Length: 247
Length: 358
Ligand SMILES: Nc1ncnc2c1ncn2[C@@H]1O[C@H](COP(=O)(O)OP(=O)(O)OP(=O)(O)O)[C@@H](O)[C@H]1O
Ligand SMILES: [Mg+2]
Image (cartoon, rainbow over all chains, first blue to last red; front, side, top):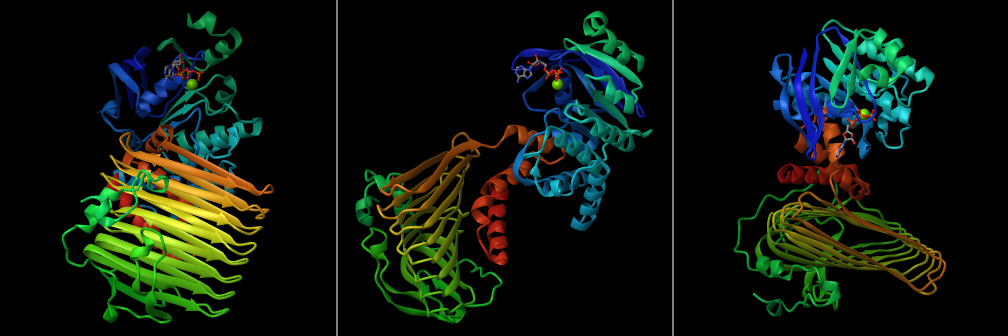
């Protein structure tokens, strides 16, 4: 589904990704772990197409098409979802409006009919319920005044509504309390654990991986994948730290 | 064409510092065009259509509005607007359907006076629309009796030319004046207002959204004078400037020595859609009383790039994301329009402007 080859990327002329290679097939969950500043979020932004993140070498194909050619909104319509480490606040735009615009823009991009207001509200309510996000928060401006954990739940509500094919989830577990962690973990499994879908799960901790069992675990250090293994690698990392294993 | 021909103050005078006198002169010299479609909203009540400043009787329905001889004021713009104009006078406790006025210009210049006089506890709603080309100059005198309420919405939708509005209002005890402007055409503009809170506990909201593109210039110059205690005034203005255009917002609050417990708020915010555009902000406070609450905020910024990418990453194309954020930016200024039909109409005009500008 996703094929990253020898990816080099820089921000303001500073190289961050330095030859990253990774393949993700349908039906798989890949966890990415690694020290602060290694380039994990940068990888997510490069895959999402954030302006200022310049690819200098390498390629990324998604379902056989050149992902790097596409505008950010076209990548979304193609099925890529980026769950942000720091979800952005948008004053003056309600969550409902934002989500409805998002979904209908993607549907339009795929040549599908827009959902009516009533159809959309029904979908939004059911997703909010499933992730334990208060209905009232759908009416509030996007992420404004949300707690850290509420922002992350809101990201998952968005993912549930958009129903993407491939999700990059950047530290979706940080800021969640113990109950929320389980709810969000269940949500990721429900929305994404399907034979036609795949997930890149960026995390620092084993605890999310207790709920969302990864098929592969990779260590990203200094802009490249330095080690890959199965679920047991995460346990080993938690015990021994990056210094021992990633070097 | 020089300022002297139009006999207007010079931009060396502080109150006229940002005025686009050249644009005004050019508008007055615009060659005639065919009259554009007049656009009334679907509302009951009076409908007046002025063609180049003259009432088009066949297309108007005056209800309680009358045409009478009126004078201007001593102001450079106001003094030109004399002669036959429209008048809405309501007796105590009277309430009318909305009054709609469409000003159509086909070029050159036209000047029109008007008055809105509401006796105690009367209530009225007025919607004005400017279309066409040329220079349209208006003087509006408003007088609100005790407890009277006026909701006025004014939209400037001329593709070209200039609209100047000179406004003078006296707001009586516990009376309420709400005025919302939307500048969403291609014309230049100057909204020049002197509002006096003449009675105790008066309430004034005066503001709007001015949207400019290309080489356009729009501005407001508003003074609210708290002459009596316990008054509250809010001036909420939003400026959006694209290309090489400029918006200037000058809003002043004066509080007289005995006007204690005054609550005055000014919120002036500008959004630059291009680095080549300009927004000038000038909030001013002159306070002579000691027990007052006056807040003012003045900021100019650009669209939040992080929010734009966040929206794009969810599938929203960049220009649509820019439009959503810009609309959210002006929403504060338009949401004060009480009548839903009018508010929706104004919002649609703002949307149309965004579709064209982005
Ligand atoms: N706008 C920027 N300009 C310059 N350097 C940047 C910029 N953004 C990120 N970086 C740098 O890029 C490197 C990688 O950052 P990134 O956010 O991808 O790390 P990360 O692996 O996600 O770290 P964390 O675990 O702390 O979230 C860091 O050294 C960071 O300082
Ligand atoms: Mg990160």
